[in-house]
Amino acid sequence: MTMLLQGKRLLVTGVLTDKSIAYAAARLAQEQGAEIVLTGFGRGLRVTERVAEKLPRPCDVLEMDVTRPEHIEAVVADLDTRWGMVDGILHAVAFAPKSALGGGFMSASWDDVSTALHISTYSFVALGRAFGPLLAKAGGGSIVGLHFDASQVWSGYDWMGVAKSGLESSCRYLAHAMGGQRTRVNLVAAGPLRTVAASGIGSSFGDFEAVWPTLAPLGWDAADATPVGRTICALWSDWLPQVTGEVIHVDGGAHAVALGTPADAPG
Ligand code: NAD
Image 1 (cartoon, rainbow, N blue to C red):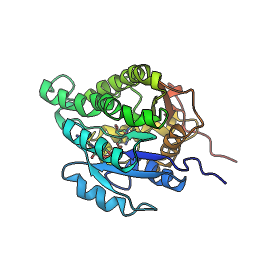
Image 2 (image 1 turned 135 degrees about the vertical axis):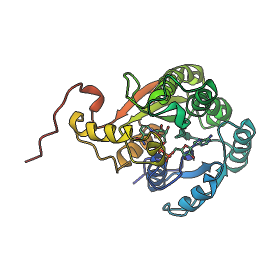
Image 3 (image 1 turned 120 degrees about the vertical axis):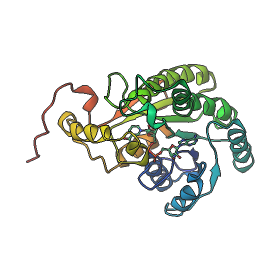
C-alpha cells in the first residue's frame, strides 16, 4: 500500500523538543514515507540534533535562524544539492520577548515588538520567497504554518496575537503570490499544546488550557500534538490539491463555540 507521503521531501523547522508540534509532524511524515531535514537555531541547535535522534529515522539538522537571510540561503543551497527540489515546508517558528506578552501589550517597545513580528510573521513570507524555486521544481509543493486563532483577544497573548493576525494575512498574500507556480500555502490553527513556546506565554497559557475543554465539542488534550501533526501531513500530501490561503482549525472545534460547557462523557 502506498503511504500518504511516499517519496516526499520535506523541510521541517521548529523542532526543539519531542513536545514541539513540528516533532509530531516530522515523526508522522516519516511514518508516512517522507524524507525530512530539520532546522534548528542558536543554542537550541544542539538540542534539536539530539531530538532528531529520537525520530523513527534520525535525520540531518541544518542551522537556520529565520532572521538571518544568509542562513536561509545556505539551507536553500543545501537542499538544492541534496534533493534538487522540495515538496513541502513546515514553518513552526514563533517568538516574542517577555515584555510583549503576559500583559505587556501597552508597554512593549518597538524593538521588542519588531523582534516578535520578524520571527513570527515576516519569516513565513521570507521562507516562501527563498524556497519558491525549489518548490516549483517539485510541481508547486505545500507550505504549512502554525497559527493560534487571532480573530479575538486572548488576554496575555498580546503582541503574539497581533503577530498571528499578520501571519494569517501573510498566508493569504503568499498563497496569492505563489499560486501561479501551484504552491499551496496554508495554516493550521492549533489549540493549546504544552511546549516551550507555550510556556513563554506565562500564566495565561494555563487559562487557555483550562477554558479549552469547556469550548471544544470534541474535547482537547493539551499534551497531544498528534492531531495537529496529522493535519500538517494531510496538507503536505496530494489529497488537498485545491486548498490554499486557508486556515484549518485543529482545536477540537473550540473556535466555533462562544460559550460552552464541558462535553458529555461518552456512553
Ligand atoms: P516550540 O517551542 O517547540 O517551537 C518553537 C520553535 O521556534 C522552536 O523550535 C524555536 O527554536 C523556534 N524559533 C524561535 N525563534 C527562532 C528563530 N529566530 N529562527 C528559527 N527558529 C526559531 O513550540 P511550539 O508550540 O511547537 O511552536 C511551534 C509553532 O506553533 C509556533 O508558531 C507557535 O506559535 C505555534 N502554535 C503553538 C501552540 C501551542 O499551544 N503550543 C498553539 C498554536 C500555535
